[in-house]
Length: 132
Image (tube, rainbow, N blue to C red; front, side):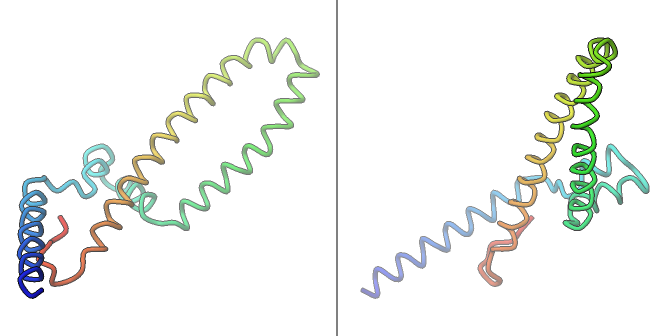
């Protein structure tokens, strides 16, 4: 039995060393997009938006209120101002569709970054594996 434990410990140490080597090979990307695309005050807002759940909640709440106001407005335009709706409704639908695609991808990027940070936080101290 002790031989099995020694083998397992040796294998765990080898795997930890492999993980550490792989992490050392990857460049640090912490906040890279925010610094390159949005310098200055906007970078702070982008970083805060990516990491502050209260700010994210307030933004989503504002979006919900917008959509709740937009539904009756769109219905009113469709029923009582058909000519206006026919001239601009397709364009508005296109914009909302593009916005939905953008926000879906942005949310996916944020989720993957959050998963990465959660995974790094789950590494136990003293395990020999360092987060990048």
